[in-house]
Length: 366
Image (cartoon, rainbow, N blue to C red; front, side, top):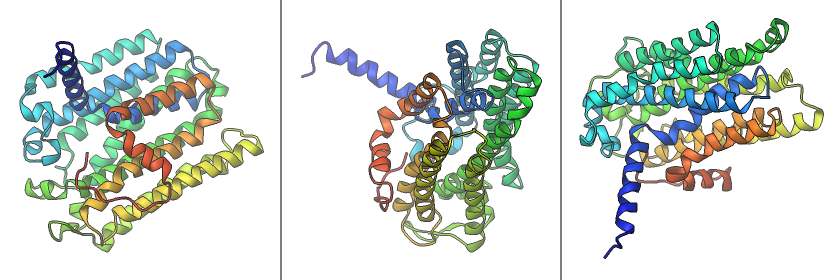
């Protein structure tokens, strides 16, 4: 029999878990990273107010993006086993309530931006990010050429990079701003390519059966990926070439700031950073080969996605780590890791502990 104290705690934890699923909180680390690193491309030193404000805007954008997507895709999600536990799918939250919540995030982000003394460029970047994300949520997987909406989504997330950079650059001289613009745009390009890759390859393969059932259009479907059996997928060569081209471009963009030494690293810091980026890139490539292989079962393919996401984003953090001041680095790491703890800590630890191991098959996927 549970104790009188245990029952309220269990109920509270159940509500907390439901909220986390509703807003896709485990994915928030990526969202929080973008405006923080965007601001860091202008200056590695942020005030506590700026760091708090950027994380708050990221949270508003995150809630808008995922909740609006779930409202639009609710009929599809009701037939997707991976979404069976979502509050919207279970009926715990009504669609109109979720829609009001999602749409309220845009004015909230604007209020925070005004509090941060953001200027016109910051507001334009923020508005573009929200608008492009709405475009993807409404027409993603429905456009004739899915690459267009994949890029729109990538630019939406990249808009957070430009938002952070423009917010921070308002306190610098035009000469200082111009000198760091290439680093900002390099980070923007990394984010766009990363999202196009994740959405058009990983996500497309994960949801392939349900997308085919609903007549959706994704890059995997357009390029001929099909279920081969209940346990396997047929990955045609043209889709593999597309996927590997994006992965190669992503790796090149990640290494470009080091080739140019855009951070001004001293030799020892440069070597350490290069070694860390190469380590995580090698891990990513090994996992990516599993994800897009024409052989192997689905469980093994799906089990590689989580560690791939962790390894690839860790490479991006490693790129900036020795450039940021300690306070900003600490905030960045907490924002990236904390959302994973309730759900993804075992996967994260496996990714760290066994950097070159073969991914272990699993029967479930998040």
